[in-house]
Image 1 (spheres, rainbow, N blue to C red):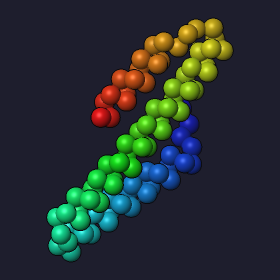
Image 2: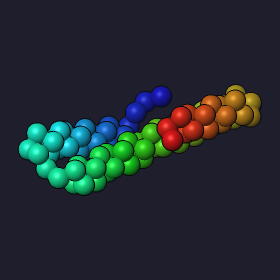
Image 3: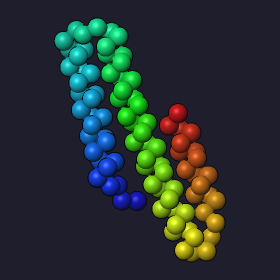
Image 4: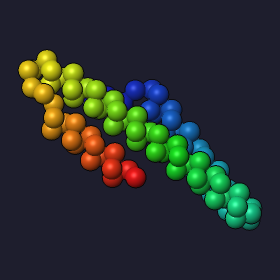
Length: 86
């Protein structure tokens, strides 16, 4: 699977948020503020995971439909990947 610019940018944004959290910790910011930012990082990563799995699922189903198969195994694999991310 080829990862597109949208996924890469989303992960770079998450990386920047995480660096911001580290800076907040070093500066002794309030616990509630740090937890809020960590939740934002987690949410951002969850969205990136979902996007990667969704794009992979579409790619697998389209590829298998061209080959004449149903793609059921690939769908099940994508569901398992989504479950791991929760």
